[in-house]
Length: 246
Image (tube, rainbow, N blue to C red; front, top):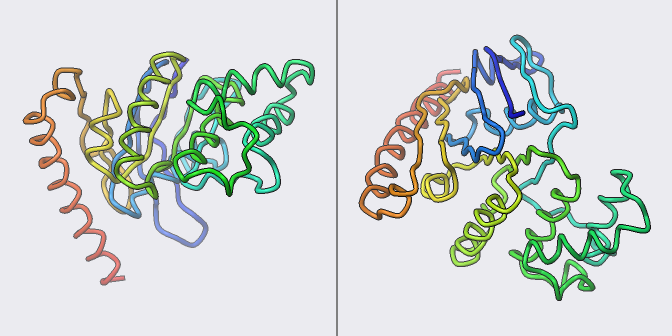
């Protein structure tokens, strides 16, 4: 089962709509990128899917076991090793104690950190900390994985490496991944479909499917990136105009 949203709207108390009449069907095992300028409700949409917020109107359906969440910041516990941070997630999820060490080792290998389990967060690079955070999210063993700009703070080389590793991991696990970003090229490189949100409130403006052929063709990818960037810039100008007028 994937994720379904039907005419979902959200407003915070005393504020205008953040998301308005948003409908989407995300299939099981699909890799979706949600693309939009700052303030368009991307993170709020993930919070709705995670059950951290309730819609003001409309409804949504997610798998019974909910969704795992990976944030922009790794937020690892600094006094625990990489392996211990992952093991804690397993413990909180009720994973049997006698099986945790084996599962932690599996997850560390899955995120290319098989030799780094004993290191504390301060001994890891930014990219390695994000790998630990990804393993911790996978430890929740949910079919749906929500990712809120997890690579935004990383340098370009590290981000490119993690893009490739995330694609491989998605293919290995068959997870349903919903990936929020404001980076157009990142959305094209990673996803099989892009949902472009409008600014204030967030609505779906465009839906684009990304074929393997398009992803691997620099000219096609660049043309689509230019097109989507133009749309986002137009939406950002609308948002800035709204802020200045309010």
